[in-house]
Length: 135
Image 1 (tube, rainbow, N blue to C red):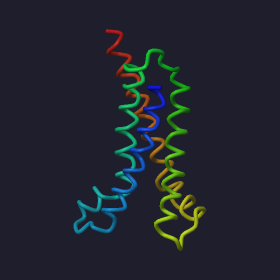
Image 2 (cartoon, rainbow, N blue to C red):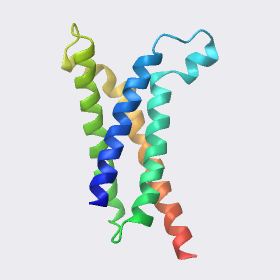
Image 3 (cartoon, helix red, strand yellow):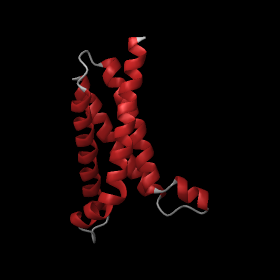
Image 4 (tube, rainbow, N blue to C red):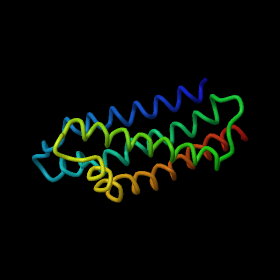
């Protein structure tokens, strides 16, 4: 039950990140604001914080933590499902666009870098939680 709650909260976090990203889109007046409000930067930052937190939560909150490989596969699936969900939401918000266009356009620009960085953050979260519990 705790694992399911963690999974659902990650998906909700990614959907909330999508709506926040849509709310601030195009409002960057300066170059600094453009860098901070860049959708790629926002996506990577939110995913990394979520991954690191999830890695720690798996080690600390769950009675039987899963093997690292199983946790990685689960994390990648969660990010991918959240990505598909936000693509569907984007198609609903912008009717002229098709799902394949949104999915394909953002695949290499947003999803792949987000997966790479957040997977590293997940591993770091699992490792830091393990190091503290051993000592």
